[in-house]
Length: 447
Length: 185
Image: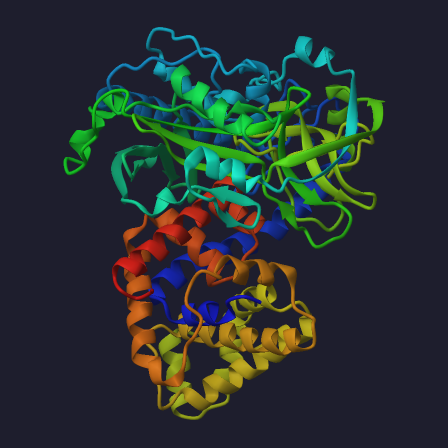
């Protein structure tokens, strides 16, 4: 073990910090077994329905079924749906409030129709063109609110394009291995060797100025208190990232709902440069996962942090992306061979581009794709839904109750008994960039 | 029974205090230890050691926050058990990951440097207190409660990817902060 002593030292940090986190942890574990009992007791009634749609309620104690996909709930839970609707309505109100907030605090900005709204892999799959082109459209930034979970719960069609998936009636399982980056190529491009941390390679410029600005704006209405939080990290010559969090606290349910409501657009010039640097390290396909804003677009926001010199337009851009294979994103992996739950970190990169070129770059967990192990027909989305309806949650596992907002195909890097493999999977999403449930698209196994 | 009553019983050397501690904080202590040591036997052993330590340390101590006081003892006992397990090559992979993540931080503490340790702890606490509550929780859940990323994701509502990112960024920023404060080379 590398630093057990520091871990031990941390025993003495501020008691309040320990207590706050400890209460959340304890509350979570107190409520989880109750969900399990409830979901398991309903599993039999759900087996015969056509779609696997559960209520995502990480701190909610009741299963809610959606009438368009489920039979009526046989158990007497008359207040449940109303409660859920009220929560949904409250959340929508909050989203609108967040919208007004954004509108008031940001200049109208241009966003591209091809960019992912939520940053989810599936949306990249269906929306991002492989050559990273992002034509501009008039300001419609409010569209980002579509990522609100309540609004996403229309059907699995968000991020799922049936026409597109038809192209994938067969997919491969690949051998793969973690790529060792060519450090000389890195040195040639950046005139400095990479800083390596595990399978992560980055420029050293992160040791430059770093500033994070956080602002929390509380609001309240009859449904409870809402907090709109914005995070800006100011990184070297430019903004490294900006995240507007929507934090909704419902007094009735004691539930804290956090949603990232804003990602950023990017620009062609930077994309070209990023593509250039990525090509140094091999024939790797990538697609973007978030959008970036320019310094000018943030000049309005600067009134919230007057000490920051935001620079002028074209000063900097930030982008991050994810590796693709066969046009499908490669996301999280997991060790399916043993029970140790080792998660393989996702393949990704991020870059910050300024007038001086790329000032910051990081590449993580890139996979070398080896030979094709097998080519097989993939399960349809409907088949995958049925599998979840029948098998989820597994015996003895803490429950995950959710309404899926979207589904998508992607490749998942996994340790298997035959070694490291890229396996095509169906991911079922709630409101996050990460799938909540993953089904092996060939074998039907829930991973 | 509230904390003051438990402390009063301990001060009076009344053994009922121990069953009250066990009843009130047994679950909490179990949550702390289960993330650090693998076997239920170890967890139970840590709990017994914790009760003994509470009995032996109150009095003379009179903690303001009994919950955190007991939790901290439990954590230290679990880390001791982990050290024993490591000596026997039985360490958990998650703890290996967590300690690996902290590899950039200083590790050479000695008895002589207790004052420095206090100073370092004060700086770390000051840094964490500057963070938003959600980020504080992510950091503390990982590096104090030694939770898995998936568990932190479930507790906080962040995606696992976000948890990874927050941890990575906060580690880097904390390192930078400590360097600027002259706490690290």
